[in-house]
Image (cartoon, rainbow over all chains, first blue to last red; front, top):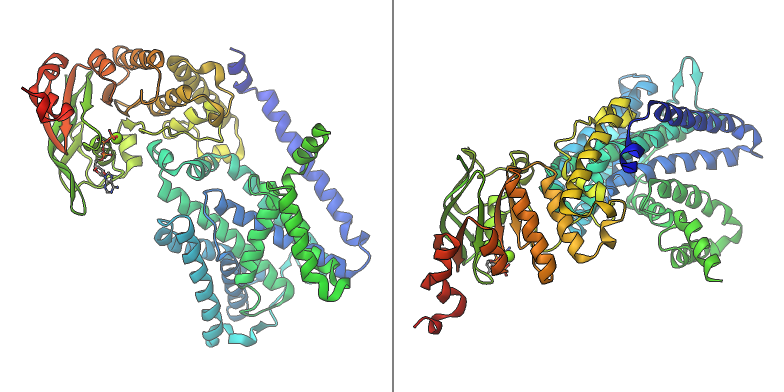
Length: 328
Length: 257
Ligand SMILES: Nc1ncnc2c1ncn2[C@@H]1O[C@H](COP(=O)(O)OP(=O)(O)OP(=O)(O)O)[C@@H](O)[C@H]1O
Ligand SMILES: [Mg+2]
């Protein structure tokens, strides 16, 4: 009977945990408010901004990973969102704040259409097809010059303006990026606990059994792919209105691999791993600049060490420490 | 008594291999029907075709009068036709209770938006589902390990968990593929009792594939026999036991004198 009581809806408990989470978010916001002012110079603000965007990419890739699929075209959807938002804001004069929303929805819709076709494949076949789609995107961005301005890219993309405030300057963009990151974080967290999250995880663990539980595995895989890719589109669009220049080189296969690396190094089991991976790997190359030629070697070595010591990723650090401590 | 499952002239080919030829049978409400046959006879294939995992090559299949051909597995489950797998099949990284909750996924009153926002209604719906699922765990006799990961359960418990997951969808007919495979005689007896219990409480009808003849003879109202994809006999356990064709299929021609 204790079990039942534990799970019984206790209005007071529910209320309390909601307030606890709101308080947590409020504290995070309060701390964030001072971050741009505390950083030594604009370069650091820029790194933090890029890290927040990476966090959005890694989290959104985790959503797709949560149905057990690994997408190698995540950067392509980020690029799609970036190009759509840049083009409609420049050509149709749509305010960037609105084009961000529109490009997110458009990217999600395109991902749903692609996903409905390719999500029958699983494992390495799915990975290969997403790789090909990523390459197709790059070729399209290069060759559809009338729309994308080809290899020269699009310049002069407008900054996001809301209520007369421009989020163009780096410290200002930080607030926008932080708000968006927090929104994505809370959304992914809630999604993971929702009925969709339960379906996603069932599919990841045992797709045949999930289907015999009555879970429409085809539909939920498309939903996860569309949500994940849509959020990547949002991140890409934010990037476009921040850097204010995009080209086919901005979102390539290498970026897709970088997002996967963040998941693996951070830890795939929990979505916090994605956040950790982004927070660790985005600034890392910048701080290795002093080592000149050795930069990439050190970067690779750090990754190998991390994965060697913590196969579960950085997220498993407490458990690894506990194990080491216990062994002594 | 009304007909639940009605299979007519079902066939299944894998390339050149005719795994099921012209198979016809039915399961009535309230029955326990055994499907037996030597290894490779096509029993699992029969389950796969009926449950929609593998498309039929011909014939018709209806459940409560509704056509099943071309329907997807998830839709067939929602119509009230559940199945278990020959190999143990669970969600290994989830708790035992969570496994059963997933089995009840389509029945849950929880909504997507409610669960996304964590509303009180959603929490209530989840608690209700959990309470129901604990009852099911009690029925299969593993409620005391409800909080453990499915992965860490002993084999016998994993097999029962498989049955619990299937029961959670509140099926009208449950198809069990060798539920007692790999169990010791005592566990096998318990599994038999569990299946009888499912039947006697009027919870669901049962179509069972099983090699353990003692179990099959003990719990089935009717038995059908498959050999090389063909239905060679049907009848009560007594009739099947003495049927020369069945003995031949199991022991080879020389055994029949
Ligand atoms: N996906 C498949 N592709 C090709 N052949 C298959 C496939 N599945 C089953 N078969 C073949 O169909 C025949 C029937 O197999 P099935 O698994 O249905 O037998 P079974 O009666 O369940 O046997 P067992 O008692 O060993 O479980 C076998 O010859 C098998 O090799
Ligand atoms: Mg079989």
